Length: 353
Image (cartoon, rainbow, N blue to C red; front, side, top):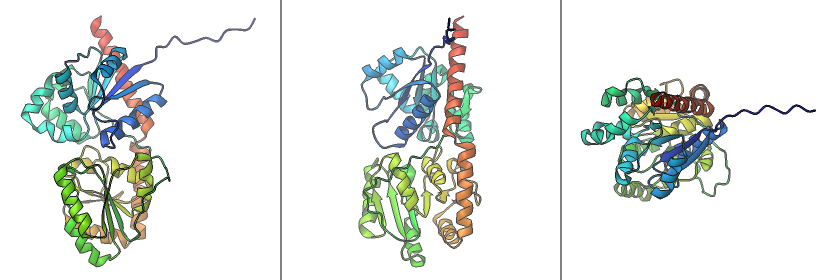
């Protein structure tokens, strides 16, 4: 008689991941899709929904079926909860990325609105040490439940790109949504000056129109200069073509959580130059895997130095890839969240007892 195989009576962990955006090409959507895919590969049953774009009834039903709720962007999530009056009884994990921790946490009125949910949560995750310090500064009672989980990077390569990409050297790419905090015209005059050194320079901004004033200013530059380009966003799996096109990827933000475009460029093997702010400093080690600049003049000098040295370009490419493999493995990211899920559920059950 054949022996029956033993089966594990193991309940599948059900997670609902709530994000502000899922269907628009924005950073939150990219984070949500990447993370839920990584968690699924770890055997977690993940249902993802957008609380800014989908019906409250659908989300309420998903929450009811879940073992744990994981919400991205604290301030937006709190505003949505207050509008819907939905009650969450499951363990709640919050992830604070860029704008909320860097901007909203500086607003006393918004801090008051967020306090109850912060206290209710079983844990808060941030991408960097700087993010953790800002959360603890605003909510010192959260000590012990703030965790740093760097973002994982997995860049897909899809060559189906119908854009006509301009030839030139250097080709500089700035991936960013058009909104004030991204400060996409910070290097504008410096680029005009650089054209005197590099007459074939090409510069392109790619990202969603999220602020009409910024969009109008960018379009003025786009119309004025043939070498200045604004492109609407493309799906993440098409970005590899643009990173391959670029000689340099830049980040000009006045504030960042953790710069996804910088990490994607590193993963693809494109040198990066970025503004010297905490979020960028968390991933760029100046002179090792990229350059950090304090002002447009420093950017100009760094650009000239980088383009004059193939050795330096290769150093940044190699250093960037090492950074990604060592600190931004999507599998390790997913395992870190899975550990927090299980820990949160276990503590909830202990408190019941």
